[in-house]
Image (cartoon, rainbow, N blue to C red; front, side, top):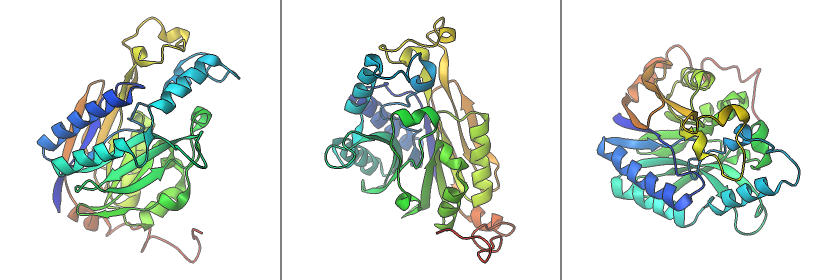
Length: 303
């Protein structure tokens, strides 16, 4: 099966959910006009990756009013699943006949977890149906200040007309059992959502494609110093150039042998596309299948 996939490399309107959603809808339309049938956005694109955790001063100070205010703004602009934003994203997928993978900050409005945010990946079918929800299993380092942990129930690929699609978020790609769970679920296309795809992240994405014998769409975003929350002071070395990029993109599309098919592209907004052929997966499985002839279930197993 031949079709075109797209990685959307762009900056959202940080901490502004309505404006970011409107930009997402426009970008989805542009990707569809380029022939894309699968459209992928970077990590927590709605309403933007919290790079301020590592780029601003005094973020970890106990009882900081400034950080509390930023967290409140982030929560107010996070996505309820399901809710009006997921309805709008589903409508965009349906209108343009595309499968859509969007990554968001998720908030819960009632019951357990009402005060916790999650780093969440959403997969929509081309009929607008929300097919799959995956919460990041383990927030990385400073991210633990703002996100709770996901559970393992969502570690599986989802059947779509474009094949079986799965995904991991950022440093989940360095959790070997998580990778294996997804490999065993039979991915054809893997979504690798990153804040930006720097060198090690690209290596992890290429390794995943080679190990899993699947196509990988690695999506990274853009963010400038001026996009940091006004309530927080940037680190001294960042204060001289508000246009300097904290997140530089680096999006890439990778084949099941680890070959880069498109990208990486840095420092510009772009809808990166490539045509993929799922028949390539079977060809590459001749030499490696970590769920079959290159597995030893008698020695290793997942519970």
